[in-house]
Image (cartoon, rainbow, N blue to C red; front, side, top):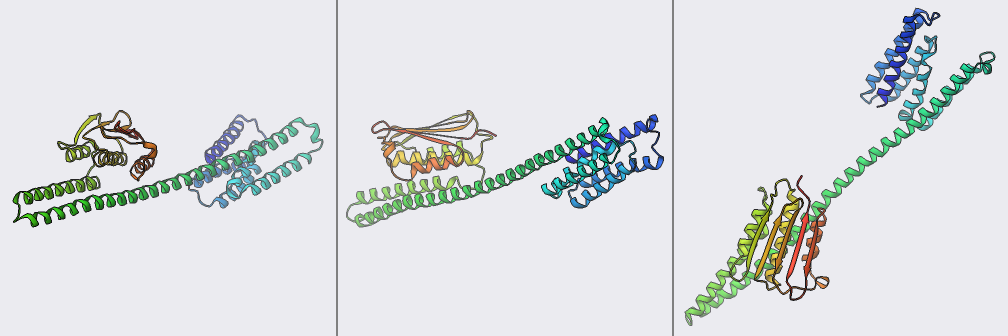
Length: 371
């Protein structure tokens, strides 16, 4: 932006000088002076093109100052005096505020000395006006550079904060994934360990009654088979969403509901809208909520009917309602409910749990929207 502003000023001064020279309005302007004037301005334009690369900042500032003197030496009419305000402006970004103010003060001192060197200068309104305008222009130039530099620093700080926020989000995601893995490990250990213990007991029972009572032995084998099937289903439910293949929340919920559905625990699934465009992280978080809610309904609530509703009207919303015994939400213990809330909160989502003793439980979770 600053380069284009400076180039525009160079072109404006060049066009003005060329117009006056062509119209013969500056008769005292020699050919050599005009050549220095035009050549210096063209060289300044070239400097701004080189400055686009962001290198040799101090050298380019010195080049600007030297070329301005060349232009001023050939500027009989005085068109290029306004360009001196650019020096403290560029110096602010290159050398800092003190150098900018120092150069501005130096140019102002030179302007004052040149003005007062003219006999009866104070009687010449044009000289006084030029000096005043140069003073105002220089002050405004330094002020504009200060504002632009502050904006640049603010932008850089904002970019740093964005980078820090991104790093923090990645860290949160890593911690969330680690916490999820730990929870799954505990669930698998507890559920599979329990079922394996039951299988072992039933098989020992079958072996003990194999000769004494065939009916008891057969029933024990059937119970062991049932425990093995339940263990297998729970393992599949726990690890199915962790596979690297594309994830579909609707399909995962259908598999989850089908695996849990039996005559003593009926699970119905309702789907509204399309999950296309919704971030995978949010969909997986909703799956975890459904898994937790269904597990609680079966293990702890004594429910025999659960309704699972999934809607994609804007945000992705999951509702799991059971007809179990219910509980007092405010006095609930354990890590399941806080885990639901933390998982959704990390993604900007929400979880609402409604329950009361004897009135069942309703879990409503919502996260994000389609991108």
